[in-house]
Length: 172
Image (spheres, rainbow, N blue to C red):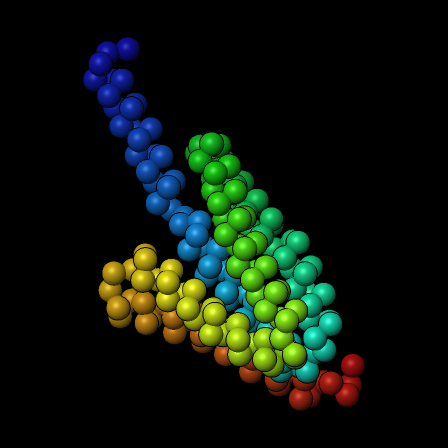
């Protein structure tokens, strides 16, 4: 193999590694996914008047399944390009997401009710999202736009669950 061919292969490998690294920010994924998932669930729990004990059981189940499933899916989707980077992303996203979800589980555990946990979690979640977005996005308009997307998703979840509870709580 000529030196030109070796250089081309080295450059392709470097580009592939850099592309794989830039495709997913593990901490950002864990924060965005963890915050949006848990806040949407807590909004739904509050809207449907779910007892705290039931909500704790649901979040514990989610803590045991969601981070591992999300991280494994990311691993599988990246493995064909570079199994080492895929494995590292698996670990990073798992640890980030499980840490965020555990934090919200603790908030719910120590809160007097689901509503207080939801309000406290909204404040913590907004802080985490601002931390993450300020780290990754340079444009303040982009930060506001991304925050509005997540908050809209959480609000839609709350409205749907409220309507569901209103129309079906005595029928099911």
